[in-house]
Amino acid sequence: MTIRLSFRRLVAAFVVLLAAGCAQVSHVQTGDVVLRERMTVTVDKAWNQFERGLGDDTPTWTQDGFTVDALRFYVGLADGELIAPTPSEPKGQQPLAFKSGMRPAQIVALYETYYSRGGSTFTLDKLSPDTFAGGEGFRFEFSSIRKYDEVTLRGIGWGAVRDGRLYVITYTAPRMSFFERHRGSAEAIARSARIKKG
Image (cartoon, rainbow, N blue to C red; front, top):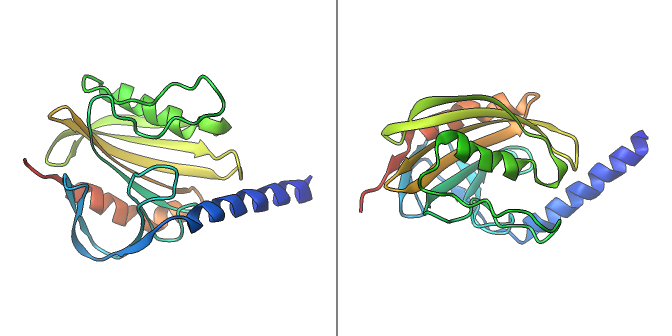
């Protein structure tokens, strides 16, 4: 059983690495960084960025590799825009489309569906009002068991809707040791978020 599980994890990791090989990796330096020409964040330490090749075009930053820790930026999604592409299999999956009239709980439900695709689990641990990007927003904390390697993840998300557009930052990492390693930096980046006018 142990050998079979280890082999499955090895195969899963290999598939992920193949996908990563198609991704463009760049370095995010310290200072102010503009994302999608709509949001600015202040970075306190360098990160690695994957712009494409992770299954969608969501900017994704990491310190130890995106299968370990991932800081993702959903910037200025308009009404009807998807937070993630709809997989072709299994059939019948509903598109994860943002609607401008959604309440925080409904937005978080989109992420619950996203993280639980493919058989992973998602548990919402906390959802509360919070200040984000200079105004009213929300914060949610969650845990997830990733199906392909059975790793337990912890996650935090910060979000707000401004002028009918969705802005969300999420940070995830394995619960044991990795989550706390870069949590402070992720929190600082989220606190620094500013939405550009115009």
